[in-house]
Image (cartoon, rainbow, N blue to C red; front, side):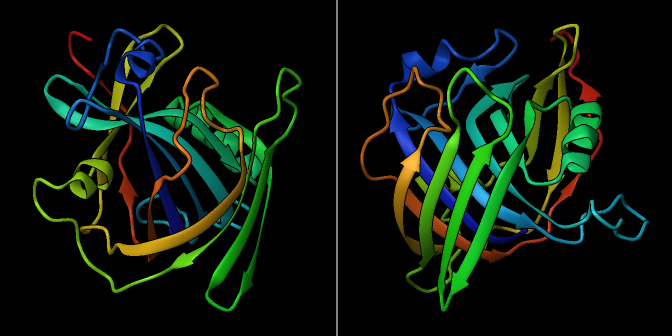
Length: 223
């Protein structure tokens, strides 16, 4: 991953909980639910032990997520994933059962600032767009144990439902996130579920680069 923006908003926990399947439990921090939007560039994507594939290994992506647990294991629940590669969309749908959609996503780098525009393709019910300019604003650190930042970013699995409504988990391995404070101007954001009211100012972090390994999905027992 490269040039990742973590934008997180505290939201009403009950409203957020109603959007989740019964197979997972919402995790809160000091009573608040949290919704995250994370745009970034995927670089050198490949299966373990293989070389990157042309047209599939590098693309832009934007995730909308919250934080859940199942069987006592904290993880991430994706409300949506938008990607600029249709091949990546098809692969993720089949392999990870994610709610992933093709999107037009573009970035322009101007010095230390990144201008990003994303728009989902083919959704006629309502527009899904995200437009922002962002960049790093401080020194690199790691999330302190027990902190809000640790709760938000140090997640080591994702959850997804298959076509029959059965819960699956994919383990995620990576070093601790090298976080930097971020500045961002978010001109437009309709990616979040419309049932959630977002405060004006999100908590912002920037990551220049991070290596991430995602393992195959496995069924969560008794879920």
